[in-house]
Amino acid sequence: MALSREQNIAKARELREQGLVLREIGERLGVHQVTVWQWLNPGKTRDKQRKDAAKRGPAKRQWERDNRAGCPQCGSEMGQGSRSPSKRFDRCAACRRTNARSRWGRLISLREQGLTNREIASATGTTAAAVASTLYTAGQHGFEVPPPPYWSRGKSSGQVAA
Image (cartoon, rainbow, N blue to C red; front, side, top):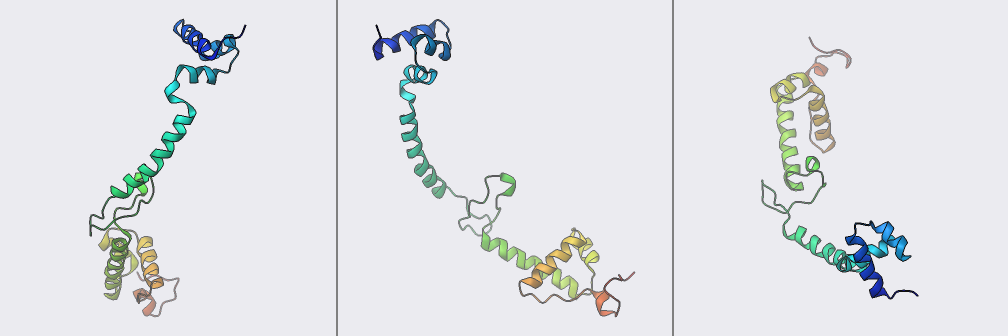
């Protein structure tokens, strides 16, 4: 004679108290171990988990909108950026653009004084390759970047001034 659902649940609880694992209880009662888990954890069924997740999603997004960090430089709202702390933005997009433009201006003014990339790098605490790349980017964004001083000395592009 087959047991009713309530009898199966009571038997499952009894077997669990005896120390049997879900798989063994399921084999004895002729049901899957997930069914046994659901019987033993009635408040945590899959439907309840789905409903809870549906509630958490919009609430979580609202919380993120309400608690989004402000830019430390200007106070405006910042985008989320990446979840990785090492890749998160430290300032809003407008401040990042402004800082880039001021950095480009500093490097261009040093170049206008007749300094080479290596000399600019030494003065700013960066590498010559980073200076070259930054000046190139500034030129791509419409800034007038003077050529390196050794270009104006009549030397070929492959030779560097000593």
